[in-house]
Length: 101
Image (cartoon, rainbow, N blue to C red; front, side, top):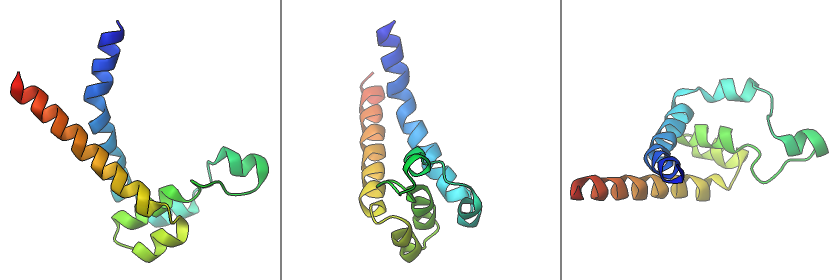
């Protein structure tokens, strides 16, 4: 049973990364700006956490607005490349696995 769950997650993770990036690219940033904050930390304590603004920053970055992305959250410059590297590593791993089968 554990092996099946691991295998399902192994196959699904690249798909979730691609879908996440596609959603950030497809949803207009203006729509995200009007939406309320979902950050539990901000709602409880009234101050922003390190991740606040990351969704809008990713959306701005994928829409080509680097200045706005940095204004929302400067950590986007670390998170976005890491997401892309993780996606490329996952795709390469799956390719080698299925090519070798």
